[in-house]
Image (cartoon, rainbow, N blue to C red):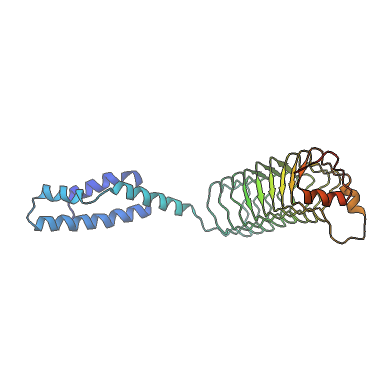
Length: 289
């Protein structure tokens, strides 16, 4: 028979975590262990009050243990198993979820909220994600290729090895973002907004960047070869180890486009400068670093 004082003691300690499954299991196990210890002390000749005090004193810092178990349990409960491929889920609330390697392929997700979500390794290939909110979301290793992202928001998102190739990015806004090893190839970026961004190892090959503004941005190890670059602006930008070379081409169209690019006030390393100079870009107001 369970001692009611032990039950009452544990009920009080565990009260703040009522309903957390793993904590409830810990409570049941602990009650069994404490009752066994209490019975041993009684059998050794201690009166009930002394046995109770000695049992409780032997527990240690139980509240810290419970807190750690509760935090872990709640974290695991938030990690949903996500396979929403071919689903109709417009304007859904996925804010703050943890969905590693989630499957959102060929789904209707227009206007959905993924803000603050950890979507590492997830795939949205072929989905309608127009007007979705990815602010502060972790999109490391995510596949967002070949889908419609028009007017979606990526404010301070984590973009590492994220694939946006062949996407519809009209009206999409990237702000306060560091894009690392991101693929933006074969994509129309004329109506995409980039504000306060750092581009590290990004690939823009074969994309349409005509008229795009990259003023004051930083580019490190970026590939622009074969992209449409007419009237692009890099005013005040920093460029290091950036490639604009199109490879073998029989047409002078690409080189004519390079001559229309504005590099006024830009800073660039010697290799980038030399390559652009060889393509007869206007570098008269560039600082070599």
